[in-house]
Image (cartoon, rainbow, N blue to C red; front, side, top):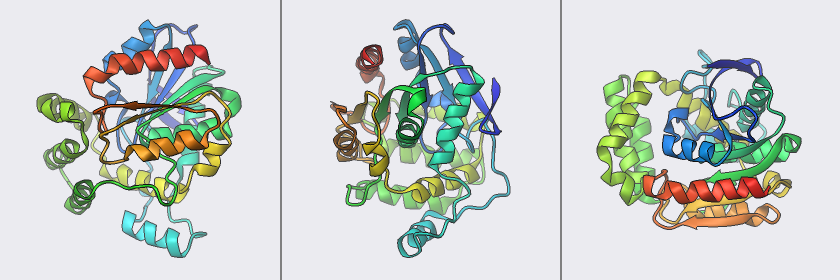
Length: 296
């Protein structure tokens, strides 16, 4: 369903009973709400939670900033390094955090547990820091503070990112080939082995919305927002950080950095998990998150 949040249209899925405590799921860069595995969503619902997922702006069925240009990542990084006060991005992650709060407003949810994956975990940090009165707990998954000095993606992943950016897929078929190649690099061993499942989900996502321009604007938003350590240090809600030990895109020291900067945060490293949500890890993750939210 569509709701109006922060002045724009946002696509939302709402699972579970309206009176149960709410968990708001925030997905990552360029990724639609359907990437949350239904076993994960249903597991949280069965644990007694109302689970709300949504498409971030510029992906899926949510609002698209058509006609608004954003620089490529190389230009954006160069500008932020040498001209830090210059803003080239049409929006930043704080705007996307306000979108998340707008979703809660639209559904008349006063407070929610925030669970964010990758870029969604970065947005979640901003929600928890800047809108603490609306947050019951925070769980960033495979995310980062983006602080200077943290390890970046491994060389193979960086090469894949560059190749993907240069390819500039113009059709769904081209995007599917590029997406499968990149997902096989960042996924866990288990995820790589489930190639047909990855391909089927990616095809569903591309048929649902093929919009490459949104990814460039979201990347610009990440770069524009920059270092989140000051925000992490301002978080006072109960926080649990989940990160895979085999994540080649956002290495686990990045998740450890969130936990180190959020007061009294708990860190849970998941052995063998890459930058994905492998099915065999979901039951334990559901239990960890449900316990964390219940305790909060």
